[in-house]
Length: 167
Image (cartoon, rainbow, N blue to C red; front, side, top):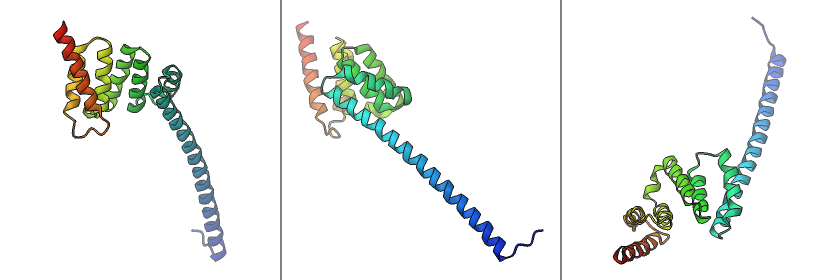
């Protein structure tokens, strides 16, 4: 067994402490870089959502596609991409992405904005019976709805009712 004196123990402790500090600094620098990248990607997502809301979906589509390559299971990305595609007239593709969003986050079926969005796409496709189902499901969450989605659902249900009576 090695017998270390006070000076030797202090030297070993200082080496251990120095190596630990260097490791912590390197880990922090790597983490800061990753945080910066994630924040930049989040900003892209926010920008694409804004473009979609402004009916500039053709500009938003490539941004969503780029982000989905990196985060293919992100329910929010899938949902907003589906919305964007539907607003660009690509209804079938929009529904596919909204279905993927629902698989990634099954609770979407309890969110009024999702139910109305899904119903609106079906309505635009002329699938009134299926759309009616989603609008009625939306009404079940009237108390939790803070965005007026249940009112939109009621308007669509009224339009579907009129279509049914005139056919």
